[in-house]
Length: 304
View 1: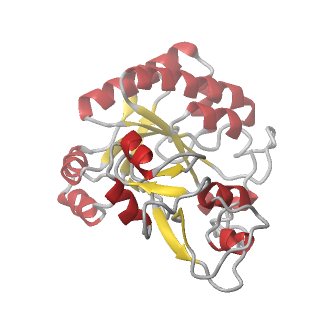
View 2: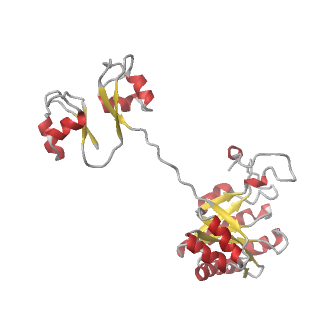
């Protein structure tokens, strides 16, 4: 449907000809008693063309332009454009008017899950049960001080992900087999040649294994490595995007941006958010077992 606002001197025949429709269609869709009842300012429904969600409303006793506009979530200006009635006009009960329908567009979400692959059939069983996932992050490929990667047994999980149409992401960490290591992270970030070796190995592994991108999960970095981490992510993004791969990061949640804060200080929300395709906020760090009780979804507390 389209809308045509009748201008002075126009006839239904002229309007029908201009839009390539019949007079009969105009009378039918607009419930006109005859072809001689149109007046300047009248909004006519024109069948065909680009679809438009339109609904009719029969004016009730006591209705005003303002009250009807509010009922349909319209501004007074938009109500006037659609109906031809000014804000102070009197609406006659029983009059049928046409207004844009409320749009109820459903939002879509993307769902991610982390999996520690074992290389056994249980990996496939888990992903079959979680077939609604958009992504699964294979946890983890451990970056080494020489720029090499040590990965998990992920072939079974990757094959299952392809069957379930789940996009696999390679998670790279600064895990040294026992803990997230700030020293290891600094060794990688502070050396341009090691950074490049890590990035090249990530791109190569994604291509060889069939990963759709890289998820960076560097944790407990030194706050003084903040700019180096920004640089690493920017360099990684350029290389991944050049190969049609995505880049995402996992970050700790914070309520204020304090560059000197341990654990969270290395995460520059504003800069990193502009560099990556998407990110995961580890809000389960709030309310953890070693701290005070707290909700894990207090997104209103986040600060950039």
